[in-house]
Length: 138
Image (cartoon, rainbow, N blue to C red; front, side, top):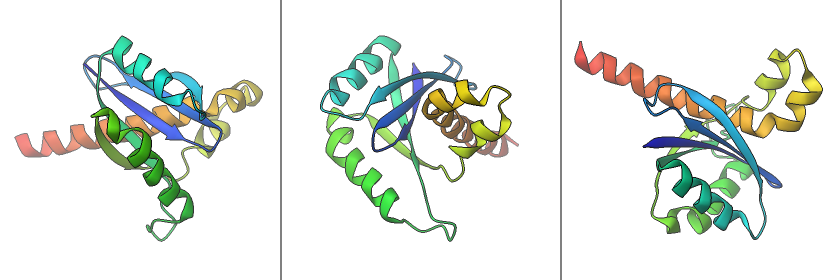
């Protein structure tokens, strides 16, 4: 089973998947945020055997829920929770800018930034989870 990471935008949604060991995040795809979103997401979940979805939430610099974060939470409630998937929220501040700032080929990355942002969101979650598990075992 794998874990999916999502970077939800108004026009596009970046998708990343974990490896089977749930240690590494891999950019996967970008799907349009339109009427076909649900069927596209369901197909990926089924094909890739996804057990959990990590959703990036853009908190404000003060750590509060701003208007975009509230919009994402409504989107998740209306479109993803109904699928019966386990959902986890992950702070996504700055994840869209990181791929652009670290890339040698900025044009290529800019076109694909949503899935790279999703990969950063998912990797943050995987690292945090691993850190918690390590601390619990010490």
